[in-house]
Image (cartoon, rainbow, N blue to C red; front, side, top):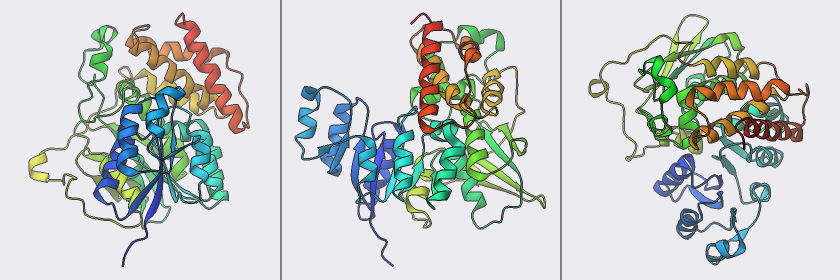
Length: 380
Protein backbone atom coordinates (compact mmCIF):
# COMPACT_ATOMS: atom_id res chain seq x y z
CA UNK A 1 0.00 0.00 0.00
CA UNK A 2 1.34 3.42 -0.95
CA UNK A 3 2.33 5.60 1.99
CA UNK A 4 0.95 9.10 2.30
CA UNK A 5 3.48 11.88 1.73
CA UNK A 6 4.40 13.68 4.97
CA UNK A 7 4.98 17.41 5.07
CA UNK A 8 8.02 18.21 7.22
CA UNK A 9 9.27 21.29 9.00
CA UNK A 10 12.90 20.84 10.00
CA UNK A 11 14.05 23.20 12.74
CA UNK A 12 17.83 23.33 12.77
CA UNK A 13 18.19 22.06 9.21
CA UNK A 14 21.86 23.02 8.86
CA UNK A 15 23.07 21.20 11.98
CA UNK A 16 24.17 17.59 12.30
CA UNK A 17 20.71 16.10 12.91
CA UNK A 18 19.05 18.47 10.44
CA UNK A 19 21.37 17.59 7.57
CA UNK A 20 21.02 13.87 8.29
CA UNK A 21 17.24 14.25 8.37
CA UNK A 22 17.44 15.75 4.90
CA UNK A 23 19.59 12.80 3.80
CA UNK A 24 16.66 10.52 4.66
CA UNK A 25 14.28 12.81 2.77
CA UNK A 26 16.65 12.77 -0.19
CA UNK A 27 16.65 8.97 -0.18
CA UNK A 28 12.83 8.80 -0.12
CA UNK A 29 11.59 11.75 -2.20
CA UNK A 30 8.12 10.28 -2.70
CA UNK A 31 7.47 9.91 1.02
CA UNK A 32 8.29 13.42 2.22
CA UNK A 33 7.99 17.01 1.13
CA UNK A 34 9.85 19.80 2.89
CA UNK A 35 7.41 22.55 3.86
CA UNK A 36 9.75 24.56 6.06
CA UNK A 37 13.44 24.86 6.91
CA UNK A 38 14.79 26.81 9.87
CA UNK A 39 18.42 27.59 10.66
CA UNK A 40 20.39 30.12 12.65
CA UNK A 41 23.10 31.75 10.56
CA UNK A 42 24.47 29.08 8.19
CA UNK A 43 22.89 30.93 5.31
CA UNK A 44 25.04 29.40 2.58
CA UNK A 45 24.10 25.84 3.50
CA UNK A 46 20.50 26.85 4.10
CA UNK A 47 20.31 28.39 0.64
CA UNK A 48 21.58 25.17 -0.95
CA UNK A 49 18.93 23.23 0.99
CA UNK A 50 16.24 25.65 -0.17
CA UNK A 51 17.31 25.22 -3.78
CA UNK A 52 17.22 21.44 -3.47
CA UNK A 53 14.04 20.91 -1.43
CA UNK A 54 11.99 23.98 -2.43
CA UNK A 55 10.29 24.70 0.91
CA UNK A 56 7.54 27.28 0.95
CA UNK A 57 8.69 28.63 4.34
CA UNK A 58 12.11 29.50 5.73
CA UNK A 59 13.32 30.92 9.05
CA UNK A 60 16.82 32.25 9.72
CA UNK A 61 18.84 35.01 11.33
CA UNK A 62 20.70 37.73 9.47
CA UNK A 63 20.31 41.13 7.89
CA UNK A 64 17.98 41.86 5.02
CA UNK A 65 21.00 42.04 2.72
CA UNK A 66 22.38 38.71 3.93
CA UNK A 67 19.02 36.99 3.37
CA UNK A 68 18.14 38.64 0.05
CA UNK A 69 19.68 35.96 -2.16
CA UNK A 70 18.22 33.17 -0.05
CA UNK A 71 14.69 34.57 -0.27
CA UNK A 72 15.00 35.09 -4.01
CA UNK A 73 14.40 31.33 -4.35
CA UNK A 74 10.66 31.86 -3.90
CA UNK A 75 10.22 30.92 -0.23
CA UNK A 76 8.52 33.07 2.39
CA UNK A 77 10.30 34.07 5.58
CA UNK A 78 8.55 33.49 8.91
CA UNK A 79 9.35 32.62 12.51
CA UNK A 80 9.50 28.99 13.62
CA UNK A 81 6.20 29.12 15.49
CA UNK A 82 4.38 30.29 12.36
CA UNK A 83 6.18 27.61 10.36
CA UNK A 84 5.08 24.69 12.53
CA UNK A 85 1.48 25.92 12.53
CA UNK A 86 1.29 25.79 8.73
CA UNK A 87 -1.51 23.38 7.69
CA UNK A 88 0.81 21.65 5.21
CA UNK A 89 3.14 20.53 8.01
CA UNK A 90 2.41 17.02 9.31
CA UNK A 91 5.59 16.46 11.32
CA UNK A 92 8.01 18.83 13.01
CA UNK A 93 11.63 17.79 13.50
CA UNK A 94 13.27 19.77 16.31
CA UNK A 95 17.01 19.57 15.66
CA UNK A 96 18.11 22.89 17.12
CA UNK A 97 20.47 23.53 20.04
CA UNK A 98 19.30 25.30 23.18
CA UNK A 99 15.79 26.48 24.02
CA UNK A 100 14.82 28.11 20.72
CA UNK A 101 12.59 25.13 19.79
CA UNK A 102 10.68 25.16 23.05
CA UNK A 103 7.95 27.60 22.01
CA UNK A 104 7.57 26.10 18.49
CA UNK A 105 7.32 22.61 20.01
CA UNK A 106 4.37 23.65 22.20
CA UNK A 107 2.78 25.37 19.19
CA UNK A 108 3.19 22.23 17.07
CA UNK A 109 1.58 20.11 19.78
CA UNK A 110 -1.38 22.50 20.01
CA UNK A 111 -1.84 22.16 16.24
CA UNK A 112 -1.84 18.36 16.48
CA UNK A 113 1.46 17.90 14.64
CA UNK A 114 3.66 14.89 15.29
CA UNK A 115 6.89 16.09 16.90
CA UNK A 116 10.19 14.25 16.34
CA UNK A 117 12.44 15.45 19.15
CA UNK A 118 16.21 15.62 18.74
CA UNK A 119 16.51 18.80 20.80
CA UNK A 120 17.30 17.50 24.30
CA UNK A 121 16.74 20.87 25.95
CA UNK A 122 13.02 20.77 25.12
CA UNK A 123 12.45 17.75 27.34
CA UNK A 124 15.10 18.62 29.92
CA UNK A 125 13.85 22.19 30.47
CA UNK A 126 10.15 21.41 30.38
CA UNK A 127 9.76 17.64 30.50
CA UNK A 128 6.71 17.61 32.75
CA UNK A 129 5.02 20.42 30.82
CA UNK A 130 5.74 19.16 27.31
CA UNK A 131 4.74 15.55 27.99
CA UNK A 132 1.52 16.66 29.72
CA UNK A 133 0.79 19.01 26.81
CA UNK A 134 1.33 16.18 24.33
CA UNK A 135 -1.02 13.88 26.26
CA UNK A 136 -3.65 16.61 26.44
CA UNK A 137 -3.58 17.07 22.65
CA UNK A 138 -3.03 13.36 21.90
CA UNK A 139 0.19 14.15 20.02
CA UNK A 140 3.09 11.68 19.85
CA UNK A 141 6.58 12.81 20.88
CA UNK A 142 9.00 10.68 18.87
CA UNK A 143 12.59 10.64 20.20
CA UNK A 144 15.28 10.99 17.52
CA UNK A 145 18.32 10.80 19.77
CA UNK A 146 19.86 7.33 19.54
CA UNK A 147 19.47 6.30 23.20
CA UNK A 148 15.83 7.28 23.84
CA UNK A 149 15.02 6.12 20.31
CA UNK A 150 16.50 2.72 21.20
CA UNK A 151 14.40 2.53 24.37
CA UNK A 152 11.32 3.45 22.33
CA UNK A 153 12.08 0.64 19.86
CA UNK A 154 12.60 -1.87 22.69
CA UNK A 155 9.28 -0.90 24.27
CA UNK A 156 7.35 -1.28 21.04
CA UNK A 157 4.77 -4.03 21.43
CA UNK A 158 5.43 -4.38 25.17
CA UNK A 159 3.29 -3.50 28.15
CA UNK A 160 4.48 -1.18 30.89
CA UNK A 161 6.05 -3.87 33.09
CA UNK A 162 9.50 -2.28 32.94
CA UNK A 163 11.88 -2.78 35.83
CA UNK A 164 14.93 -0.94 34.49
CA UNK A 165 16.23 1.21 31.65
CA UNK A 166 19.93 0.83 30.86
CA UNK A 167 21.31 3.73 28.84
CA UNK A 168 24.70 3.20 27.23
CA UNK A 169 27.45 5.79 26.95
CA UNK A 170 30.59 5.74 24.82
CA UNK A 171 32.57 7.47 27.56
CA UNK A 172 33.28 10.50 25.42
CA UNK A 173 36.60 11.85 24.23
CA UNK A 174 38.37 11.39 27.56
CA UNK A 175 37.26 7.92 28.65
CA UNK A 176 40.87 6.71 28.92
CA UNK A 177 42.53 10.03 29.74
CA UNK A 178 44.37 9.99 33.11
CA UNK A 179 42.36 12.02 35.57
CA UNK A 180 45.33 14.21 36.44
CA UNK A 181 45.56 15.34 32.80
CA UNK A 182 41.95 16.45 32.35
CA UNK A 183 42.63 20.00 33.53
CA UNK A 184 44.88 20.53 30.51
CA UNK A 185 42.65 19.18 27.74
CA UNK A 186 41.78 21.51 24.87
CA UNK A 187 38.55 22.22 23.06
CA UNK A 188 39.89 20.46 19.94
CA UNK A 189 40.55 17.33 22.00
CA UNK A 190 37.07 17.47 23.53
CA UNK A 191 35.54 17.70 20.06
CA UNK A 192 37.24 14.48 18.95
CA UNK A 193 34.44 12.06 19.83
CA UNK A 194 35.47 8.40 19.46
CA UNK A 195 32.33 7.06 17.75
CA UNK A 196 29.88 9.83 16.80
CA UNK A 197 30.07 12.88 14.54
CA UNK A 198 27.99 15.58 16.22
CA UNK A 199 27.80 19.32 16.74
CA UNK A 200 30.26 21.09 19.05
CA UNK A 201 27.88 21.62 21.98
CA UNK A 202 26.68 18.04 22.23
CA UNK A 203 30.21 16.67 21.71
CA UNK A 204 31.54 18.65 24.68
CA UNK A 205 28.48 17.58 26.68
CA UNK A 206 29.41 13.99 25.83
CA UNK A 207 32.90 14.54 27.22
CA UNK A 208 31.52 15.92 30.51
CA UNK A 209 28.62 13.42 30.46
CA UNK A 210 26.07 16.16 31.01
CA UNK A 211 24.69 14.87 27.75
CA UNK A 212 24.09 11.49 29.37
CA UNK A 213 22.38 13.14 32.33
CA UNK A 214 20.11 14.88 29.83
CA UNK A 215 19.26 11.48 28.32
CA UNK A 216 18.34 10.13 31.76
CA UNK A 217 16.05 13.12 32.20
CA UNK A 218 14.53 12.52 28.75
CA UNK A 219 13.92 8.86 29.55
CA UNK A 220 12.29 9.73 32.88
CA UNK A 221 9.72 12.01 31.23
CA UNK A 222 9.21 10.32 27.86
CA UNK A 223 8.78 6.79 29.23
CA UNK A 224 7.44 7.55 32.73
CA UNK A 225 10.15 5.53 34.47
CA UNK A 226 11.23 6.46 38.02
CA UNK A 227 14.67 8.04 38.41
CA UNK A 228 15.97 5.15 40.47
CA UNK A 229 15.14 2.66 37.69
CA UNK A 230 17.36 4.32 35.09
CA UNK A 231 21.03 3.34 34.92
CA UNK A 232 23.97 4.30 32.73
CA UNK A 233 26.79 1.98 31.69
CA UNK A 234 29.89 2.64 29.59
CA UNK A 235 29.80 0.81 26.25
CA UNK A 236 32.77 2.00 24.16
CA UNK A 237 31.66 0.51 20.83
CA UNK A 238 28.36 2.48 20.73
CA UNK A 239 26.60 -0.44 19.04
CA UNK A 240 24.09 -1.22 21.79
CA UNK A 241 22.24 2.06 22.08
CA UNK A 242 20.16 1.22 25.15
CA UNK A 243 18.49 -1.70 26.88
CA UNK A 244 15.19 -2.31 28.64
CA UNK A 245 14.83 -4.85 31.43
CA UNK A 246 11.35 -6.19 32.15
CA UNK A 247 10.00 -7.50 35.45
CA UNK A 248 10.60 -11.12 34.46
CA UNK A 249 14.31 -10.45 33.97
CA UNK A 250 14.24 -10.40 30.17
CA UNK A 251 16.34 -7.67 28.58
CA UNK A 252 15.81 -6.22 25.12
CA UNK A 253 18.54 -4.20 23.42
CA UNK A 254 18.61 -2.19 20.21
CA UNK A 255 21.80 -2.69 18.20
CA UNK A 256 23.12 -0.97 15.11
CA UNK A 257 26.32 0.71 13.92
CA UNK A 258 26.61 4.28 15.24
CA UNK A 259 24.70 6.19 12.57
CA UNK A 260 22.07 8.77 13.47
CA UNK A 261 20.25 8.26 10.19
CA UNK A 262 18.75 5.01 11.48
CA UNK A 263 16.89 6.47 14.50
CA UNK A 264 15.93 9.49 12.40
CA UNK A 265 14.49 7.23 9.70
CA UNK A 266 12.67 5.09 12.27
CA UNK A 267 10.90 8.16 13.62
CA UNK A 268 10.13 9.68 10.22
CA UNK A 269 8.52 6.49 8.93
CA UNK A 270 6.95 5.27 12.18
CA UNK A 271 5.12 2.89 12.43
CA UNK A 272 6.70 1.49 9.24
CA UNK A 273 10.21 0.14 8.84
CA UNK A 274 11.83 0.64 5.45
CA UNK A 275 15.04 -0.49 3.78
CA UNK A 276 17.72 2.12 3.09
CA UNK A 277 20.78 0.83 1.27
CA UNK A 278 22.92 3.75 2.44
CA UNK A 279 22.60 2.85 6.14
CA UNK A 280 25.27 0.41 7.25
CA UNK A 281 23.93 -2.84 8.69
CA UNK A 282 25.11 -4.62 11.83
CA UNK A 283 27.69 -7.35 11.18
CA UNK A 284 28.36 -9.25 14.43
CA UNK A 285 31.55 -10.90 13.18
CA UNK A 286 33.06 -7.71 11.79
CA UNK A 287 32.00 -5.79 14.88
CA UNK A 288 33.66 -8.21 17.26
CA UNK A 289 33.38 -8.02 21.01
CA UNK A 290 30.87 -5.72 22.65
CA UNK A 291 32.10 -4.64 26.06
CA UNK A 292 30.87 -2.75 29.10
CA UNK A 293 32.76 -0.83 31.73
CA UNK A 294 31.72 0.45 35.15
CA UNK A 295 30.72 4.07 35.65
CA UNK A 296 33.46 6.30 37.08
CA UNK A 297 31.92 9.02 39.23
CA UNK A 298 35.25 10.79 39.66
CA UNK A 299 35.71 11.04 35.88
CA UNK A 300 32.26 12.47 35.21
CA UNK A 301 31.26 14.73 38.12
CA UNK A 302 29.06 16.85 35.83
CA UNK A 303 26.70 13.89 35.39
CA UNK A 304 25.75 13.72 39.08
CA UNK A 305 25.67 17.50 39.32
CA UNK A 306 23.24 17.81 36.42
CA UNK A 307 20.95 15.05 37.68
CA UNK A 308 20.85 16.44 41.21
CA UNK A 309 19.84 19.84 39.85
CA UNK A 310 17.22 18.45 37.44
CA UNK A 311 15.56 16.29 40.10
CA UNK A 312 14.69 19.44 42.07
CA UNK A 313 12.04 20.20 39.46
CA UNK A 314 10.43 23.55 38.83
CA UNK A 315 12.70 25.90 36.90
CA UNK A 316 15.89 24.17 38.03
CA UNK A 317 16.22 22.00 34.89
CA UNK A 318 15.75 25.05 32.65
CA UNK A 319 18.40 26.97 34.57
CA UNK A 320 20.69 23.95 34.24
CA UNK A 321 20.31 23.98 30.45
CA UNK A 322 21.05 27.68 30.19
CA UNK A 323 24.08 27.45 32.47
CA UNK A 324 25.48 24.44 30.60
CA UNK A 325 25.06 26.12 27.23
CA UNK A 326 26.96 29.21 28.38
CA UNK A 327 29.66 27.20 30.15
CA UNK A 328 30.31 25.07 27.06
CA UNK A 329 30.52 28.21 24.94
CA UNK A 330 33.02 29.60 27.45
CA UNK A 331 35.13 26.45 27.30
CA UNK A 332 35.13 26.40 23.49
CA UNK A 333 36.16 30.06 23.47
CA UNK A 334 39.00 29.42 25.91
CA UNK A 335 37.53 31.40 28.80
CA UNK A 336 37.44 28.44 31.20
CA UNK A 337 39.13 25.06 31.40
CA UNK A 338 37.43 21.71 30.90
CA UNK A 339 37.28 20.92 34.61
CA UNK A 340 35.77 24.33 35.33
CA UNK A 341 32.56 23.61 33.40
CA UNK A 342 30.85 21.89 36.33
CA UNK A 343 31.96 24.33 39.05
CA UNK A 344 30.92 27.31 36.92
CA UNK A 345 27.45 25.80 36.46
CA UNK A 346 27.16 25.07 40.17
CA UNK A 347 28.32 28.55 41.19
CA UNK A 348 26.05 30.25 38.67
CA UNK A 349 22.97 28.42 39.94
CA UNK A 350 23.69 29.05 43.63
CA UNK A 351 21.37 32.07 43.61
CA UNK A 352 18.62 30.60 41.44
CA UNK A 353 15.13 31.45 42.70
CA UNK A 354 13.06 28.40 41.80
CA UNK A 355 9.47 28.52 40.55
CA UNK A 356 7.73 25.28 41.53
CA UNK A 357 5.05 25.21 38.81
CA UNK A 358 6.58 27.20 35.98
CA UNK A 359 5.01 28.40 32.79
CA UNK A 360 6.80 28.10 29.47
CA UNK A 361 7.88 31.72 29.84
CA UNK A 362 9.24 30.99 33.34
CA UNK A 363 11.40 28.16 31.98
CA UNK A 364 12.81 30.30 29.20
CA UNK A 365 13.48 33.16 31.63
CA UNK A 366 15.31 30.79 33.99
CA UNK A 367 17.55 29.57 31.17
CA UNK A 368 18.32 33.15 30.10
CA UNK A 369 19.07 34.16 33.67
CA UNK A 370 21.48 31.23 34.07
CA UNK A 371 23.31 32.11 30.86
CA UNK A 372 23.86 35.63 32.15
CA UNK A 373 25.10 34.31 35.50
CA UNK A 374 27.64 32.05 33.83
CA UNK A 375 28.76 34.85 31.51
CA UNK A 376 29.29 37.14 34.50
CA UNK A 377 31.33 34.51 36.31
CA UNK A 378 33.55 34.08 33.26
CA UNK A 379 34.07 37.82 33.05
CA UNK A 380 31.78 38.31 30.06
